[in-house]
Length: 226
Image 1 (cartoon, rainbow, N blue to C red):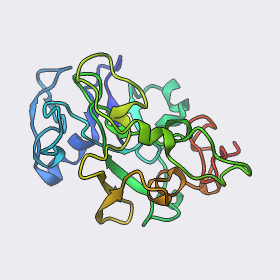
Image 2: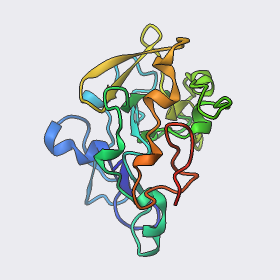
Image 3: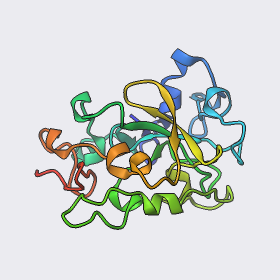
């Protein structure tokens, strides 16, 4: 889960940083912006903040994998269960855990707040997948969005604030699905910055139509058959 509640639900929003707070006991705690009687864990300070992040008061400095960590924003009602984002993926979807990034340091969003996830859709990363489909594994668009916005505005989907930011001598901090934290090479010509290897999941492992074709792309950029 990347987040739940918020929106029109009257449920105080919880992001993943707040969900793990009882276990890590790190980060800022303040009255909730939706309900002053509730607590808000924005994911600022402590382990959730990078010392070199240009906007230290913005949350979402680290984002989780959008498709693995279900987005329950403005959830849940009976009808919202039909939304593909409100389905939880199983661990079996992760085909190569040593290669798949589940958390990445992102750029500054053009808002006072940050996204709790990083983008994993094909068109956020690459404008071409080659012919035959999947033969070109690249991250051209994502690397162009290796940037920081000014922290004001309404936020941009799949912009700097939702893609890896290679601010540490041209590398970015990431966490792989098999656990260890590692450096993620930036702007290389090899597969280190490729979309398929690091972000995509094998659609053949999806069961029961977990994602709709426009919400989930497989390892060869092919949507699952629903």
